[in-house]
Image (cartoon, rainbow over all chains, first blue to last red; front, top):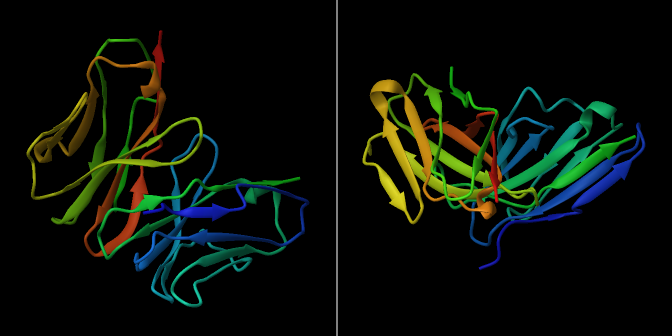
Length: 113
Length: 114
């Protein structure tokens, strides 16, 4: 059973550019979560999906951020018009059902120059 | 409001010593879940344990043990006979039954010195 995978692992971009990250959850996991982790801090919740439905979005998720899970399998997180403050590790996690253990992927480290 | 406090920012111990990482949580829910995750230098969060609020039994897994005390809202983690490979950042976390997101503490960076 493969774990959660994320692509790319690292992304360097210039301020103002758009970036998109992908997350593939553990197969048969219905729930998929996005978190953001900045240096020296714990991960912070961004949003989550039950199958293809986006159930909750954090206030951290500004209008420049959008997440999708079109077929209830993989998910994408897009950041438009990136800012230096967006530099962080973006973590994806999945779980089989509500309140189950969330298993995390390796993360995508974003650096905005 | 939910909150997780890990008062120890950084700990250094010599290999083979025992070390305890403290975690204090706040929640108004009666049903909640507590977690510990390990984040080695590679960056991936590794799940260690999940505990629900109705199960106060202490747990031992090899060199790892966890002490859950509802009376003090604490969920402490002890590593016995520490090894260099235990060096990592450890996060304590909480989720409430009616809300599926996990709230993490700021983490404790553990250095095991050879």
